Length: 128
Image 1 (cartoon, helix red, strand yellow):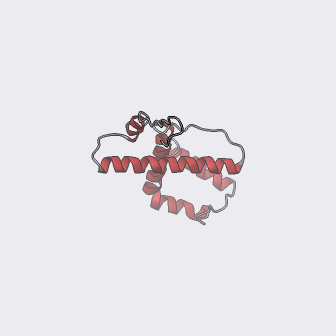
Image 2 (cartoon, rainbow, N blue to C red):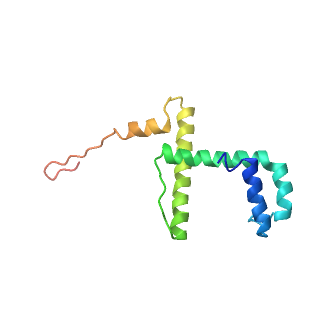
Image 3 (cartoon, rainbow, N blue to C red):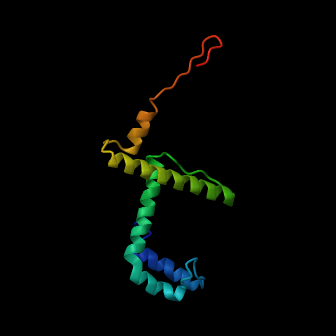
C-alpha cells in the first residue's frame, strides 16, 4: 500500500482516469474536483488507506483468515463481511484485554482458550 500511495503512482493513476474520462465516484466528487480534494485531504486519506491495510494484515496473520477465491459477487461480499467482523472482534478482544491489564494479546488469549476442555459424563440413564 505504501507503493500505491507514492506520489508518482498516484499521479499516473490520476492521469489514466483523466484520459479515460472517468466518472464521479460514490462520494459524488468528479474528476475535475478530485485533484483539489486530494491536495486538501491527502494526509487523512493516506492515513486511512494505510490503517485499512494494517487491519487486513491483522486478519491475515493473527486471525489466520487467508484469501478465498470467490467468483460470485454475493460470495465476495459475504467473505468481505466475515473478514470485517473478524477484524472488529479482534479489536474488541484486544481492547478489553488491555483494559483488564491481563497482558495477553488476542492471539495468546485465544490459544489459552483452546486448552479449556468440557466433558459431560452420563452413567446409566442418570441426568448429567
